[in-house]
Length: 413
Image: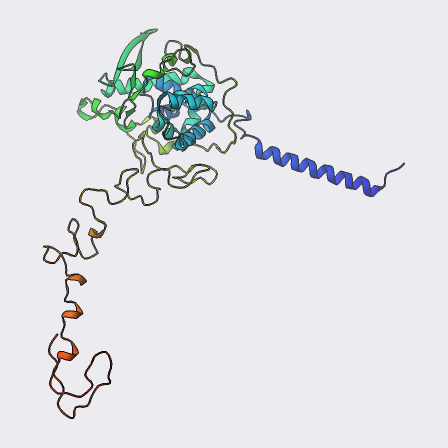
């Protein structure tokens, strides 16, 4: 039996519609070209790689190894950072156990005890995505960049052993190798420094070791577990082989690791002129430049319409500067008005000077307020006023005023 032309056209239209819906769904769920294995961008030059690694090159070896390997999955950086925001009460082994149940890669399980570091990476996700690409392409080049930066910081006097870290200068193939370890193996301090300062010798050759500061140490005693791939004891850099190792072996990528449920990160080109060290000049300070900090860096406009102070799936106000009622100068989590001597009614412009309680008659340096003026009850009432002279007429009654006319003048108020 021969089919009618109309039925054939109908079948063709149905097949075209079905194929269009299928391709649309595939486009919505497919990861970005970078995650699909598309052509990666050109690798950074040695100078550009130094710019990327400058803010973290002076971190302890084990922490630096975890940061660089975690950078190979930028979407996971954002997901783990968001997960930490949703679980602020987890600490210690409870935190790492919960992160392991989430299926995060080992480097991230080790980094969850350093939430400010992960926040820093999320705020500058494009930089760390580029670091991850460099690590995937050539670990030796990344190691060489770290050593170049450490050599400059050591020559400037900024990189030295102290109560927080131990700096060892070793020899490998006739070349100095700079290794950084925690002074106490069970406590890790995250250094904070300005790359425009630590990599150049100051004028006059003054030692600049004070240009590196440290926050509160993070105890990792319970996390030095060698039978876990995320145990801190098995992480570091093999400076002789110029490669990263974890779980006491070479790192060669994540196999069967974390798979992001939704790819919303889209890589963007890096503007190298907006970073210190542009064209090898560490004295170059870009316009509006702020030294890096591992705690609450300036807001970052994430892709996909993301606004600073919000996280995907969350509500605005997860970061200082975007919390409801937040004002500059208040501490995170505190309500305005908790400063010593602060009173909302003492702001300039409301009739008092700062630090003076308003409304107290006789208090020095206060302006007259309505409370200090004579009340209407203390003013002469109409009944007490002298009546007008005879023949002067009378006012309409009401409000307690006299019915008849009277003479005389009003008394002053």
